[in-house]
Structure formats: structure tokens, C-alpha cells
Length: 323
Image (cartoon, rainbow, N blue to C red; front, side):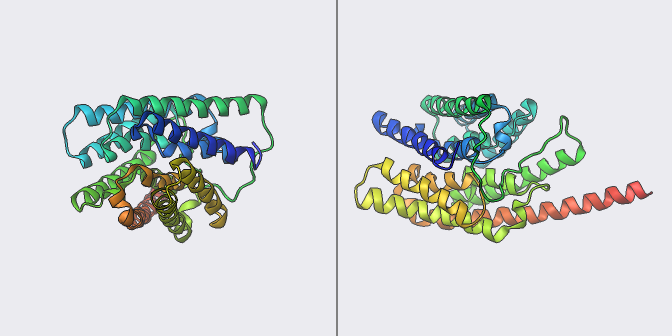
């Protein structure tokens, strides 16, 4: 897609989701990460999510079913459900060799916002299916006019066909990071510290082979700016001025795409962070950006710990080989 068609396609998909939610009067069909999925599939040049379009539908749909099922059938504390769901979806991604990380958000979002409606699963399936068909069509016609963007954050999981000890160890550290942040968030009543798009962003920038983790200041600035702008645009355009919700979210999407260029960093979960205020209680809007800032700060700190562990592991491997 070219520079006009790609943002327009993302925008129209998001508008479709919010208009449908307004028509049926059910916010549980809103999945903010669908915007991130569309950006990764249609907007970003050479995203790993584009390799197998079928997984753009299959992975999020299975994840949504898993998350809703966990919430509906297992009456356990949410921090435990979040950790267990993270393990299950990570295993699903490994089994299918899928790189579609927003699937993790699709599973954890129902637990965070307490949504166990079948409409949510149907919405994720239909919207991700639209994205998969669009990406498959582009692949079929071998579109060459891809959008030229700054260095991409989607250096996600360049996985081999099988996991070795190092890959397992890395994902164990990711699990520990997510679990610790989930416990802090739920026990300290700071729920949006563990907003699902933050978890996806954490996995992306913690990738030891990626460059995103080497830019923590810009990373923090992008996420925090997305959270603040999402709240402000929603509050003023929708709640204060009474504009339709789809107008407000259109501005949020376009502004988020601008932030990618402003920060010279393309991080699709940031657009989901900007849209998440549309499905949280209005009373939580003033403190939402602060909780997101704390969350991303803690995740960046965990990334540093993971990097240090990886360095130690590489050093130990080198010593063993030397022996």
C-alpha cells in the first residue's frame, strides 16, 4: 500500500469497529490492538506478521477464545490468570510458529477489562480476518509500493524452527517480568500498569536481536505520548464537545501515526495504548497515562535485567566453548 492507502485502510477498519460497537451498544467488541495488528500487517514495511497471513486471523482468534475462557471458567485472581494466559498464548505462538504478538493482548484484554462476551471473540475473529484477507491480497499481487518508514520496531522473535535453551530462558524471563508487573498492578490498584499493549511492547523491545530496546528514552516518550494524547482527544472531542466516538478515534489513529514519524520509531502497540481509554471507565482517564508511564518504566527496567542476564549467558557460553 502507498502512503495514503495504508493509513486510510487502518483508519476505516478502526472506524468500522467503533461504529459497530455503537450500533449494537456493546463495548466488548472493541479490541484496541486491532489497530496495531492492521498497522503491522498493512502499514509497516516487511513486518514479520506479514509472512503467513492466515496467522493474522488464526492466532488472535484462538487467543481471544483462550482469554475469555480463562476469565469465564476459572475464578482465580486476575494476576494469576494473566500469568497463566501469557504462558498459554506463548505456547500457542510456538506451536504454530506464529509471530503475531498482538495475540497475547487479545487473550489478556478480557481479563484486564473483565469482558467475557462471545461478541468479543466474534469481533476479534472478524476484524483479524479482514486484516488477513487484506494482507493475503497484497502478498498475492506482490505490491511493491510499501510505505517507507523509520527503523521498524517489529524485529520480533526471529525464531528458528526449534527452541533451544537460550530461547526458553529468554521467554522464562519475559514471563517473570509480566508476572511481577501483574502482581504489582493488581495489588497496588494500578491496573493499567499491565495494559495488554504494554505487554506486547515489552516482548518486542526485550528481543535481544532487535534495536528497539537500545532507545529507551524514545520508547518511553512514544508510549507516554500515545497514552496522554489518547486520553485528551477522547475527553475533549467526545465527552466535552460531544463529537461521535468514531470522529475522536479517527483523530487518535491519525495522531498516533504522526507520533511514529515524530519519534522516528514504529511501535504498533502504541496505537492500541492510545485507543484503550475508549473502553476504560471515564473516571480512570486522568490517571491512565500515569499508570501506563509506571508500567512502561518497569518493563524497560526488566528489559535491562534481561539484557544483563543474556550477556552473562553469552559470556558463560563463550567460556565453555573456550574450555
